[in-house]
Length: 308
Image (cartoon, rainbow, N blue to C red; front, side):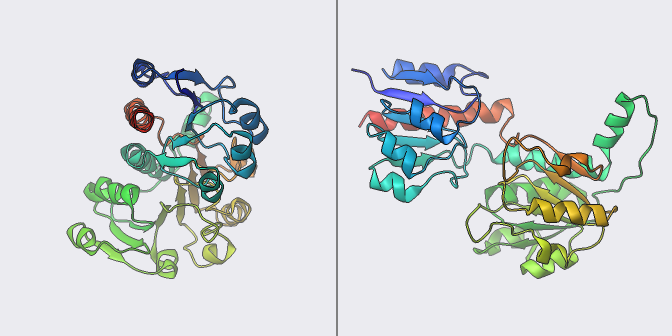
């Protein structure tokens, strides 16, 4: 009897069927998420029983879910972020957990740069005005020469530094683990969070979500930043206190923000009403090349596990 694998990411196999074919040719039975969107906890509990393996998206996988799925032996999270997985519960139920930690890097870093440039040159509002028949030229600013503060200098943060190089920016960074060789080779200055808040023209967050990092960008942090700062989050929802950001952007018309991730998704909230805020629907890994690589990597990990 073939092992049964459920894929819950809404896009799995849509860009290329190669990952699906890999799984099937390995003798695995593959079932696609029937909802075509992120599963709610009760939906996971309904669907997952009877499956041996799971290629997961961003749905919550907690004690309740693992308890309902006694046959589940393996879980591969498609992407790098693991805050949706309760590791203690997975271990308790003998579920091996992995992810695809590197395939998303170029996609997220390039999207971050795109969001920064779009916000600086007011591309979003300009497009919106033209579609409404309004010929209006909003004054923007240059990226060249700015001070960019990066909170979390891991794979994505480092790739962003490389992409920023032609713009001759000054890069400040904060990370719990300082890569001094990379910093020296790429003219990055490590500093504290407060200095990043006070000195940066653009602040981009690339740190994992944990209980201690929740609302890292909140009222206290925003009280220290420049009145015309740009806040960027293409990392994880919940790192930014969205209510505090709304109040800050309303009070500082020269400030701006670009967000690709939100505490609750799909996002529907007051940030949508602000002209100085650019939003995208969590598309950091939604580049065809990135999705294919992520899905192939996940498929191979599933095959390796069930071939043991």
